[in-house]
Length: 601
Ligand SMILES: Nc1ncnc2c1ncn2[C@@H]1O[C@H](COP(=O)(O)OP(=O)(O)OP(=O)(O)O)[C@@H](O)[C@H]1O
Image 1 (cartoon, helix red, strand yellow):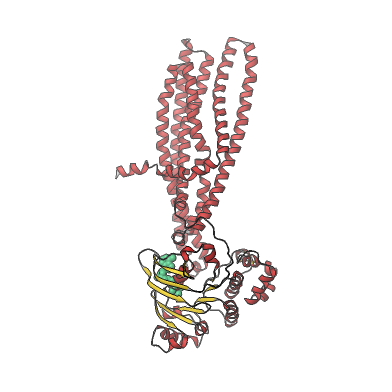
Image 2 (image 1 turned 120 degrees about the vertical axis):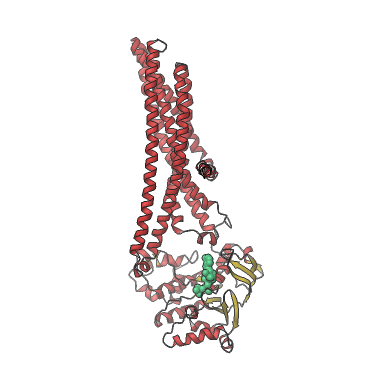
């Protein structure tokens, strides 16, 4: 138990990972880092030069050597001015390089997330992903900036000062040798404790963000189920845990500063007393004593500083560790897909013997086969959980079957580039998602280089043009969080206009399950009929009207096709389809909206 705790405490894998992740960024910005290194060497030499100046000017004053003082004064001022200039450029360039790397890392991270398999994304909490951008990346300054440079600066100062101190008096320098290991070991120990605490702290920030994300997304549900108290309690608990971790961090830093200051003050007094003794013995001059004491401050100060830098460095490393957990996940391609104008309708779409499971345990499909007729309307019906949406996900290549193949024109979709494959489909999802922005901006997302005329025509065909024209800013009306709220039917028709504009040969339609009023339903249906013309349409059907006119109805249950055929044919058989429709007919008498999946459940 103890052994594993110690092992955990001294686990440096994350430092290794930190540098394997950030190394390329540091190398890429090597010019700026070289300038920083040069400034750092300047700063070290100025430190030694300043100690030398203090010794010299003190000795000159003690000896009353006015001539020497005359040329020492401008040197002293020059040292100060050079130091100020170095400090200005050091701060400026360091901030430039750290912000540049953070910017590059943010872009790389988002691109990586975009390219990750859907499986990885759906297994990660949105709040955690957000936290990488809002918290983790902003905490990496240490490993790419001040702390990284400090870890080089301080040992260099230490070595330079030590050599100079040995020159003044070797007996006094031994004091430095005694203090060095205490400072380093103490600092390293606290650094590791701070790292482990920071890791827990960052995880907690991720938890809180995930929780808040869910709260804001599900606010109406939360109110309708009267969950405010429970959620507030959970939030209090999480923030209290975060507070405790922050306090622990403060305690660790406090202890750490206490030790550092203690070492500093004791060695200062000790070197001053010992130095005074050597002055009395006439072993060293007063000037040398002052030089020595100044250098001692420059060594013990930074020496304990190294530990503090190490602590911050460790805390940054744990932020990088969280980011690298995402960046370490394999992506499927390196290229972000882009719209590709599909020329023709594929002549065949065949599914051969696929086996698929989301979690490698529960199989959704086993030995699943299907030939999809081209240019037709194919409806998929079946109870909830039958695998209809999963089939759509597989056809679009969002998930890959563990075995078997999906072929378009006899070519496996795995061999078709994501740009070509995804451009072949226009997807109208069950829940319409519109981005915040104007209506026009939402429609322009469909494909590049759309003209105003194409947009208006699509909106007319989707039965939404008149509504848009009645809005205050027409196509430039803001929708979503900052703008006009749209009804379910209006949103659906905008989504249909977007699908029309995409102009893809295959239409995937996950019919909305929520009931629309009959006027809205009529308008949506009309829009869909126009959209389906000359296309292969695959629809997860919930409306009886869609099913009756479908060229082929596939009845699915528990990942299997249990029946297929046209409406009349299936009605003549004693099977699941008839059962589903009969139950539905009862409801249909009072409600024109039908929802097979729900009723069948
Ligand atoms: N991302 C996922 N991870 C793990 N399991 C999933 C995931 N999505 C769906 N499932 C499971 O796969 C099975 C099929 O789900 P799917 O959504 O394809 O059914 P469906 O027929 O579309 O249902 P509905 O009509 O209710 O939308 C279900 O058992 C479901 O729990």
